[in-house]
Length: 538
Image (cartoon, rainbow, N blue to C red; front, side, top):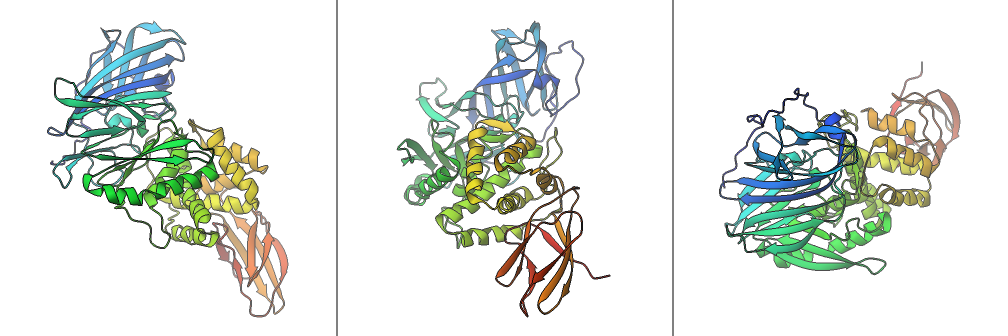
């Protein structure tokens, strides 16, 4: 199949509504915040020959106020054929990716309403391998279609009409992937049935998602997959369904390599609690390139190989952590995406600590430290579509959590707090402020200045100091240089095998430390993500 990029061209408007045209907004504006989606039923037919899709989506929602208009989202290169309510055609207006739907009579606050949107077209094609949003159309080695939707970073609007806002999770969803009969359609949730008697010769794979889900986390995969079934037994004896959809020539390799899924699930269960989408099962689907971690169904393109030295599959360990942080505990705004990336990357470190040892985990963490750029804050602008320019949300974010662990200096308390996060915020979309308040409460310390410095400013805290080195005594004058006033954080300094814990603030302090001849002073950067600046004496 030829891969073609379809840009965001502005097609013609829908039916005129008679209402003034609002301004396009990707934030939680008036026409997004006035209703709450409870359920989607998405039926999409995938045509590999024309590289096109057509479908309908039924949307059930509750009016949160008296309203006459709601906003849906769909990229302009996909045509909306009609919008209906109880078989009555509704007027709609399009502007770029925004679709305003008007109702002939105002909907009263609290009213539950169902509409249906019919659409068609050629979805944006992925320009290159990786995580840029769109569809990937290609053939596998046996000449069969191999199709992947990758839209978790860019939103569900790239291929289906929805309220594409991170803050609104539908309570549940049905997804019908309609494909040529020689192919299999895989999506989120649990496979309920396969309907084989369509007059067009296509088969419909019918999936049900029984947990809250964001539109950006909805996906599909199409090919001549072979399904491998397995089970994981939880600590309480409960059985979790495991399914792996792989290329026909990879069955034996997948059966062997994917045994480590059970080790991952067991390790994360001990740290974070049981896998959060238990009823829907756990699923890996072989894809031609590595994507993100859509809810319950991870694209797998890691060639059945482990990370050298550490002996674990990065995709399995990292992307599965996103089921806890990203899919269950989600962020309300792309500005807060660090929550997903930092915790998933830090979960890798904790996985190594549990399956190997602390020293091995620290070595992995040090590798990530070398990749930190410190060119932009971890938190981006809110209310707009924004993607970071570096991987600092992952690498630096993991170091921020590791640093906080060492500030707390109580692993029992730290692990109890980590475990409570997926419990307290299960299936919710949260903000950074909510998470910081949670840490303040659970750790019984005020972490506000800590997070303000590490998240809202590109530079980490700088330990500024001057020193006078005598044979038996070391005079140290020091302070924190930070963007956030009133910043305080303990830090360890070492002489050989000995260490001292200091409590710097933004004000200069002086301390005299004992030392042996020849011992060198250094900051403990194994425990804290900080910079040091040795100033000359005046």
